[in-house]
Length: 67
Image (cartoon, rainbow, N blue to C red; front, side, top):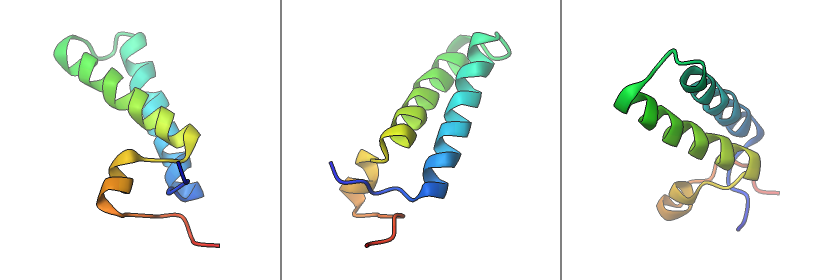
């Protein structure tokens, strides 16, 4: 897996992912929307930490500058 996310992209993903998870676990959001928030939050958090987005790979998108 080659990194395909820029630093800013990764920071935004980690912040939004953590926020969605926090909203669910503090019971601000619940039900079906809460479950969706957990799934989306977990995916964003994991891809932000790892630096690779499978969807970006499929669509041949790369926000990381080539070195």
